Picture 1: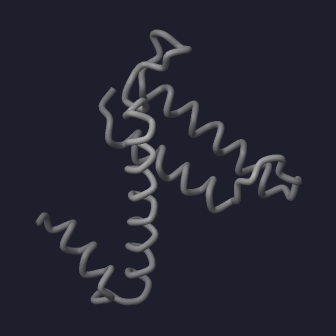
Picture 2 (picture 1 turned 60 degrees about the vertical axis):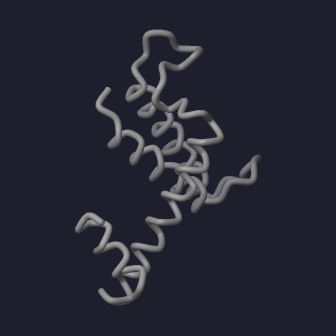
Length: 106
């Protein structure tokens, strides 16, 4: 196991304090969601978008992040949502796109 994974495991087990445990748990929650969605979408985030030929995957991820930031702005302004998506859901999706962006070199 890498030193980073050991640190995460220790934090999940509470060995590095309560704050570290909460941070690690939130990170694992985002990673679990991201891995599930990546499987469900067939790793499409790492492929050229079907409706935007020529766009690099990293550029497409940035567009998706932009959409999430706009959604977040709407939710935080207090406007009534027309779809059932919470601020937490939107933040989790944004965190997921950031991880995807960091995991690609394109």
